Length: 210
Image (tube, rainbow, N blue to C red; front, side):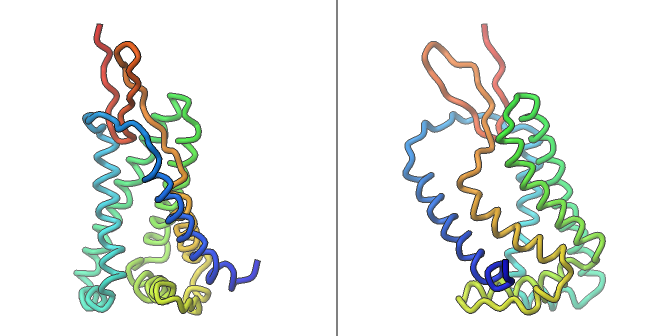
């Protein structure tokens, strides 16, 4: 497969997949799950994902502001540390949820969670092995993503980056395209008579009542 297809075509195919899958999920009539308390793993996933997503979105929306912030080594170290903490929290939460699904025999959910976890761990590797992940992101990934958003794809900088960054970016885009179709599984909840409702992925299973 040529580089032009990898970097210039697949992202748009993934975007169409996300759009089509999102519409299908919104129009599907599924019974709403009742409110349930979250597990500690669910709260960990939410906290870690919020931190990671926040820094990625800030870098994409305001790259110059983040570059100015990173001009100070101390501030850059702080940002890198917070990002790494968020990624580690997210990794731990995903691993906990994956093990829980494995114990319940929900292997489809295990695979879905494993795909997300592999992406997060790849990001951790970039942050630790290549150092200054925010600099790589601002100077390599952001220009590529912005070129895609302007429908003028330019992967010159990304193609010159280490292979692990290329794989991380492309796999993240592909995962976004698959996200609406992934089933992370649900925890069966005890119900009365013919009722059949299940709590969500991050919720704690309810205890049986006599």
